[in-house]
Image (cartoon, rainbow, N blue to C red; front, side, top):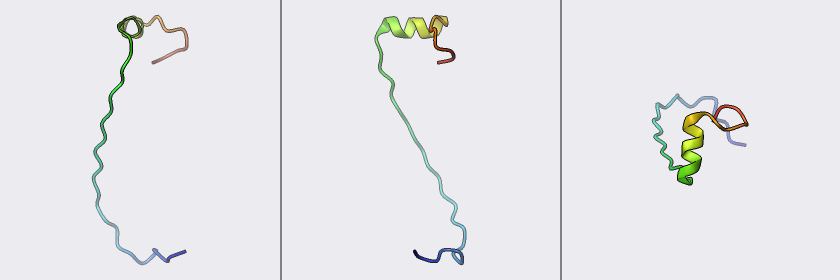
Length: 40
């Protein structure tokens, strides 16, 4: 293992994005709260 305790802190920025695809009927069910498994 490499010793990293003496290194100074570095400010970093991460940007993430995503895409969720589903059938239109699924989107309607999610929006209307008709999913039986809790919060979606």
